[in-house]
Length: 314
Length: 314
Image (cartoon, rainbow over all chains, first blue to last red; front, side, top):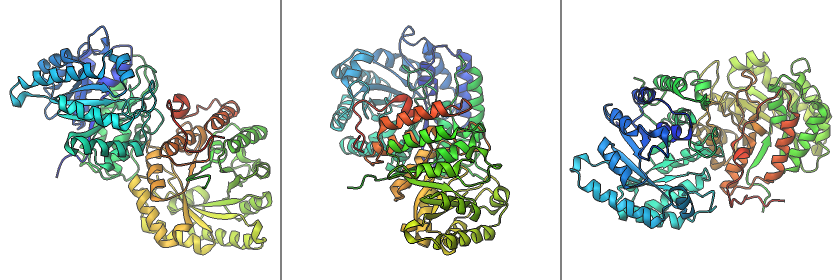
């Protein structure tokens, strides 16, 4: 019996902290990441290998990655925007590196000033770099299909375009692709339809994860659609921090705590101990700079009377 | 082509306002209800026929009901706790009256100091009263299955008990029953399973509605499950007000604005004009006493660029 039915990938240390101007100390990040792992969260996106002047909040990503790698059984994921970032990620020992590619080229040009072809060239170079490593040391290399449910600049993003970019990412050397509702445009129908279309193009084993936002309150409804259609990794952020760097304070990411309750209430094991997750939340609340308000309904309400987590509590 | 795929029943004027200690003026209630109806919301629960000393916030329910009845095409719903309340509702001309019955008898005794049998006797007497009216003047009479997903006092509520109470309500004279997740315990699996079990017992045509809470953030995921299993009426509250009278400020009800976005994003017509709904929200914000914060992600984020409502906008 597997420990997980659904793997939650906690993105708060990267997506959450990059959205908050004040900088969490390296020591606090380590405490928080350790507590997250202790609660049973199987994967944590611990940072992003971008220049410190772009995101000073994540300037310690190499050190954090190395620290996280000392935690047993934790998948240490990082974001990289390009080959240079991948070099840093590999040097630090990351288990998984994700390069986001905006399916909306307007968004790609605005965000990273690169065309699709330029981004695909980065992917090819990262693949070549990874292939120089011994097989056992190669990180998993994911291409993130950003803005694949719609774009704040372009509006509708055609699904056939998402499929083409997914194929191009795989051809350029990614091990897998992931769906990302960067803008919070997605609906449950889109989640199902797009998952199926990308599966048809690149194979079911090569798309297992989704990154959802709660921009219009639809995050957990979309997560429900995602896990029921058969995706098995769902990104979420403790306290719902982050997900929307251009709208500080707005809840962007779906909330880890509420996602865990939703999944466990359906009998889906996340491998997470609820009380320990609350300890990690407490550490985050204490360490989070800038008096940012944490979101989350389940932490306020507590678990229902008589509720049994599907995950055996350790 | 029907105007609606899903009918939203707005419960804010009853469930929302009863949860807030300060009292909204009768004039403001009328303005808000008119604006809600103008936005296309097909059904509004405008109040509760309870003694004014119990809920002074709803003391003007008779006047509000009479006012709402002057609005064309609006279904005017009210809550009644007993025969006496039903007499008031019928005198005021309500189109639909709902008597809530807590499937958890502990909760029933604590909340209305009545056993199940005493509540069923009220139902029989209300049925007898309704049957004295000319057929065209009879309100629809619903039995609300409160705490049917679990109880803060009893914990688990057996599904077979929900089914038995649903049958008993129909036998005692209700025209239909509705599911109510009073405590915010429900999961999408429970929503589907319980809907099917009650359908099997009382017939699909006699259970069409559900009242969900967002206590643990699961509200819209449960709504997704509800509409996809085939329920067609979903309660919601503008700004998410109410739903949890014993925890002021807590978001209990699911948020009308976000539910509308979710449904319309799936191509399900609610009959609602989004901009007019925002006007109704603005009126609520101005009229709401006590500086209560309105919830709602979609009002903050706005509709996605290029988004087309499934409902033709009037």
